[in-house]
Length: 288
Length: 259
Ligand SMILES: Nc1ncnc2c1ncn2[C@@H]1O[C@H](COP(=O)(O)OP(=O)(O)OP(=O)(O)O)[C@@H](O)[C@H]1O
Ligand SMILES: [Mg+2]
Image 1: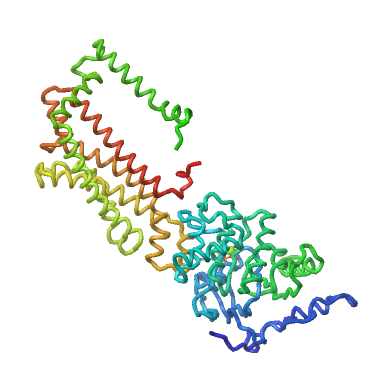
Image 2: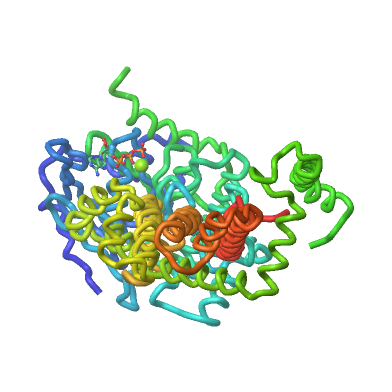
């Protein structure tokens, strides 16, 4: 296991950021219930770190997409990444999943107990093999891990979890968009990933299917306790699902906000709305 | 499959027009509207078929031609497939050979007949060479195209899930290229018969084309027409076989899904 020494002091000098807890305390009107009753220390606790970025930059030519990113994510956290289109969210995930290499800086990914690479990514498109039946597609997630009947049993079990057990022998082309995305989720989860990166996986779905998928994702995350990194355009989705939201702007982390609200969260609750407004302010505040 | 009245009707309608044409042709030949020196009547063709079948000549010639066609096809097709796969998968191989192959492709292979006769005479090698050369290019071009058009997102997905190069090839790249390879295969089958007809009419001492040329010498127009029809039939047979193969291997493809 690779846990890195965490030294906040070595971070480049930047305006001292108010912690989410302190801010919430300041903003909670007197007499109101303070939701941050037991703030969890984020960086200095003794939980395992799932992955950490240290001064990571990624340039394409002379265009800096990610600029000196520092990020530590504890194991089991559900973190959402928000930012305007083209700000480098997908690039961040590609670095995390090893599809791309940083131009400078170091990136440490904890490989989990088995020491195998169990970092999985779920793309915006399902990316199912059209020539493989649903169960076979899910078994792709077990490449190099399990074979034959063992793989089949595992894939049927996870298909059952996403509610598609009865479609195991069908071709992907006959499924609906939401069902295909659920198969992709099953494929990503079948090997019990340590980290699951999700690149706007629900972006192409209609509003109702989206909410259904959000619930599914949350319940499976609670069961399997992996570290989830969700890239999304939807601020409401981010605050509804995540423990922590980061906003990327101009290559940097412009906001790092904890959402320590109880689950299950109610859509449209005032707490969520307030946090949502805060994120939107960060995103568009500079234009006003 | 169910043979409902509707399906019979649907399959039957396609045969209506050919049947009418044959009928009209027979009437025209009987009434000497078409001179027997220009075209044989369908009944005469059937008669010729029966005669040659009994003498064993027909079966022997069909056998010779089919063997030539298939062996030429196997040789040219496998070389085309190998080059197509190699050039689709490896940039080095593509840089080395693709330009050369594309240049050779622009030579109509039938233009080589005089040269081929000089090299091989009218022996079997001449026909094999021509068929193999004719078949090579459609298979090569379409295999290459098929591999190049495999969805890169799927390949990336395979990599993220840790597929080895062989697994990636057999699970992602080859199945993705298969529809295009089949297009090449069916096209190559057409070229295969075409090349063989030309080669056999020019340089052969057996086979269907030779039979047709002999018949022309003796003005046996019914045998000439018969040879042409048999060529058509063999071509159709080969195509149906390719379609069957396609239907079996591309079940996943929405275009081949029944219901
Ligand atoms: N391979 C590449 N070569 C050159 N530029 C690239 C490459 N990949 C990404 N970029 C650039 O990096 C920037 C960030 O891209 P990225 O895909 O990470 O954005 P994103 O935040 O995911 O956007 P979206 O929300 O629209 O998906 C874009 O300006 C893009 O043009
Ligand atoms: Mg993106």
